[in-house]
Length: 354
Image (cartoon, rainbow, N blue to C red):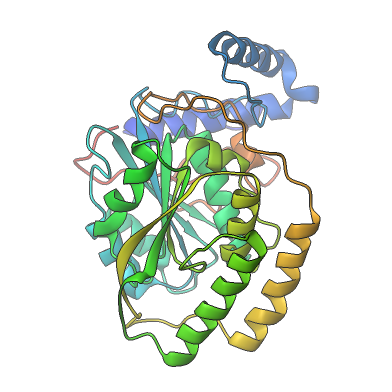
């Protein structure tokens, strides 16, 4: 039996996530997942069959019960050494992100060395996941999509943590999904207003966006935007084939599957703090082969079944320990001990309830 750690006074989201992690750890410690895990998977399959959802769970037991059964939007921020900007971005995120929906702010700190995770917690992030070392933006976004889906998000929004994209536009990029007109939404800088972008970055954006448009045989105006929204089916089906970046391969994958795209004009202000990891020569050397790899992989057409984003969604049963890599816990946070795997760190700021 794995050691369980229950910090005193934990309530709301934190208590539910810690309990889920403990259940996952106990099930994983038994050969084959144990009878309880088997029963849990069987019960989950039966519930899905009864509801006629028509999709399979990632499997396992453990992430059930994280939400209150209400409709949920997950706003996630991948971050690497963004301590100077991330706090202000989090504080500007609308709550609720969509009227009548719960909002959970998720930060994935990709091995920062400047205290990004601590700043995010202090600013009010609901869930902070920290990679022990830097794994890459594509890797981090892949993890965020997976975790948002397992938490039961009916819709999700990704926004960069560097302050270049306006959090106030989050409801605008959610609107086409909530209206049932789109599955995937890009916040387009080139349909809105741009301030401070250098000419060579603008040229690089034009070139990569044009290349994607030619491949997909449809016009898109901003293939590299850092503000995007996803329906629940798009969250589940999105594939990111390399760890370095996500932008182009995400577009190619979702649109090749037939998910409906919308673009929404947004305002963009070039970053005033930190440094971008993008260097054009290295960027092209890594991104172009990844695009070729994505195009060589088969895709299945998106299921054209009815999806109503306004309905509550239960979290998907799935082992918290399956999140890769293990999450580095903060001091005083609950840990599922054993085999080097910890439950994701979760902090609910004072005064906020689950």
